[in-house]
Every structure is written in structure tokens, then in C-alpha cells.
Length: 441
Image 1 (tube, rainbow, N blue to C red):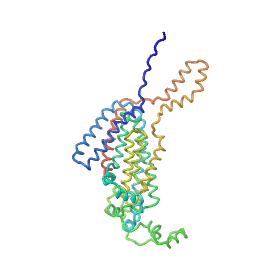
Image 2 (cartoon, helix red, strand yellow; image 1 turned 60 degrees about the vertical axis):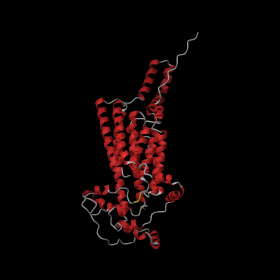
Image 3 (cartoon, one colour; image 1 turned 45 degrees about the vertical axis):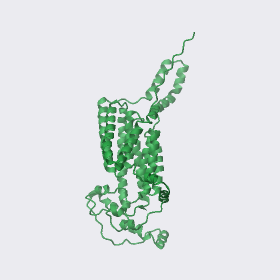
Image 4 (cartoon, rainbow, N blue to C red; image 1 turned 135 degrees about the vertical axis):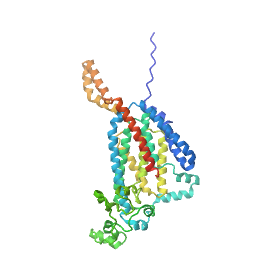
């Protein structure tokens, strides 16, 4: 009688399968709860005041409890230098953008902002037409401030920290590096784009209410733009001659503060006496600018957050985040913060940039890829060893293949604990800064 076959042991669930099962709840519910509770600040401030501290305390406690048991702190430490480099790159991009925003808002003078009409925008026409035809309940939902800039940033922070719970592939700093680097590249491209052509704001009153800038255009604009802006004969002449010919008008001498080595910024930023003692104070007031900035930075952040969630986690919550991205884009158009083209360009630029930076972090199993590469490298040796029945050689080659997929040498426990504590403290400070600097959208 033949022996009954032993039952085959079920393989342990794969990480991807675990993540799909967690997508039903867990991280998705935490993200939805965060956005929902924060939205209560518009509907029921008293209830929001009770629920928000409880939610944040729960999330912080869960993170602190899980951190000592996280198995990939070694990978996080190795990813830290790239993350810091991406942050420095991001800060440089934001500084460049802030200087450029002030320049395009101030160079043409306050009179230009008052007198230049907004561009015709068919997206705005469509939304106004829908307001006439849709039920008011739906229109009210489209107008609602459901999610803003700091929500998207916080959603990404939650996604990165979910690596502690094995909800996404670690290291969490890996996806954070990709997010920061991609956003920095997007910000640089945006700065180049809106510097290339200055477009009038969809809100003509913006500059007068937000900035203290001279009424007249800067000497650069007087020489190269203003004389040829509206007179058809002047435009024909400058095209024919391909040389500026108008004289700079005699306006009041502009205010020139003592900025030391940064005095070269005076002509770019056009400060006034009430703008503060330094160029840094002036840039802090740049805000979103008062010329149209092609493309929308808010929508870019939203798209990058949605792309990160879609690739790293998936599930129903990623679909919800994409709907929120579309809601944010139509609200940017509806409230005249941007033209429709700014939001459309931001969506496809964000998608393309995220696709192009997969070399920094991706969901692909890099350990398996290294094993396969090593196996391909030694396969000829394996064939020869098998032909010669050299078991020791085969065992040694297979051991090389296995070692190729293993992580590098681990760090000491003291280094890991110090790094974990500093990362948690850094993130809490970043969260506070996010709420302080981006809470107004």
C-alpha cells in the first residue's frame, strides 16, 4: 500500500497580499479619518476640537509602540543621506521659486495688475454653466473646502510612516526621498515655466491687497515691454528692427535697502520701506504670487501624493484620493486661484515626473532582482558544475546568489534606537511646521 502523501504546508502570505488585505481598513481608514475629522472644523468646531487631539494621540501612540519592533531600521539609516540630499534640493527649489514669484508679481508694477484683464478661461465658463444646471447640493459639495495643501502633505507622511506596520514596502525614507526629489524637480520646472511668460492673475485685485509694490513698471519692463505692449505700430516696428528703441521714463527713485551681499536681489524683488529689514522677510510674504503661475503648485502636490498612494498602497483609498485631486483642481479654477490650463498641466506633469523617478524607490523587489542578476552571472558556472557533478561548487555558487539578495551589514542597536528617536522627533516637528505654514492652503 502506498503511503499517503503528506499535506503540503501553505506558504506564508506574501507582503503584497498582506498590503491588499490591509487596504480594506487600517491605513485607508486612518487616512479617511484624518481628512474627515479635519473637515469638521468647518462644520462643527466643538466636535473637531475633541476628536482631532484624540486622533493624533492615537496615531502617535501607535507609531511609538510599533517603532521598536520595526525590522528595517538598517535600510532606513542607509536611505537617510539620500533623503537629506533630496530635502536640501527641495529647499533650494522653494527658495528659487519664492524669488521668482516676487519678481513676476512686482516687475510690471501695480498699475499693470489693476488694468490688465484676466484671460478667457473656458474651464471657468463650464463650472459656471454647471452651477446653473446641477442640484444645489452637488454644487455645494463642489464648492466645499474638503481638502487643502497641508492635508496632502500629511497624507503622504502617514503613507511613509506606514512602512513601520509593513503596509508599504520599506524603507519609508525611500519613498519619501522619491517624493521630495520629484516635487523639487516639479518646482524648478514650474519656476522656469511661469518666468518665461508673465500671465495676468485671474484675481485682478490680488496685488493691491497683498503687496506693497511701486505703481510703475521696473526699468527693465519700461525698456523691453511697456512701449510695445498695446500699440500695433510699435509692435510692428520692434519686430522689424528686432531692437528696443523706446527710452526709459523718468519715475521716482525706488527704495534701495542695505542688504549687503544680497543687494543684487533689490532689482529683482523691488522692496518698499514697509517690507521689513531683510530680503528674507520680504520673501516670506511672497505667498502664492499675484500673477498667474503656470502650473499649479497645489495640484502638483496633490497629484504626487495620489501617485505615491496608488503605487505604494493601492486600494479604495487611492481611488478616493484621486477624486479629491480632481475636486481640488476644480476648486482652484472655481475660486480663480488658477486658470484651467494650470491645473491640467500640473496633473500630467505630476504623473510623468513620478513615473520618471522610479529609480529612487519603487514597489519592485530589489532583493529578488539582485538575486536574478547574480544567477544570470553564474549560470554558466552552474551548468559546468552540474555536468561535472561538483556538489560543493554548486553549493558555493547558490550561496553567492543568496548572499546577493541579502541586506548589507546591520548597524548596532544603539545607532538604530538613536536614529529611530531622531526620525520620530523630526517628523513631529515637520508636522507642526506643516500645520503652521500650509494651513491656509
